[in-house]
Length: 81
Image 1 (cartoon, one colour):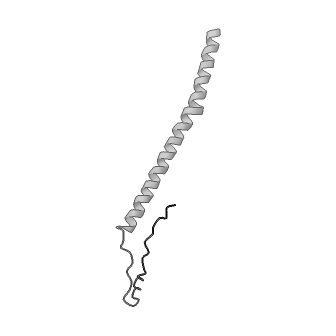
Image 2 (cartoon, helix red, strand yellow):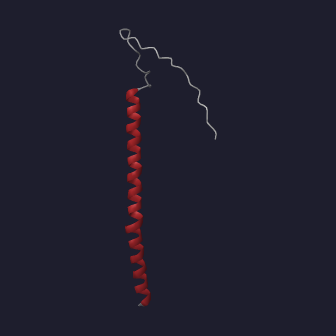
Image 3 (tube, one colour):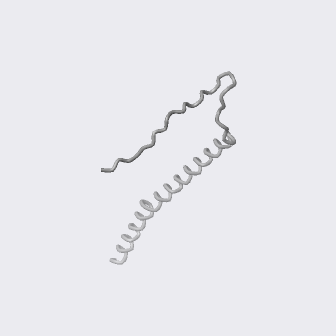
């Protein structure tokens, strides 16, 4: 009789462990993997959509770029006390 109660108790503990710990971890892991795979596919499709990186836009002939102003360079010297 005591052995049967112990087996039932052990089966209950095993049931709780499997269905309240192992199964939720397995489902969560599967969901996270699916999410990462979807994100990777979206990233690849976006990269394929845009193709190769484009060069930055150049100034048009109608608007010449302003030359950089050349100022005096003042050398910085550290003052030691």
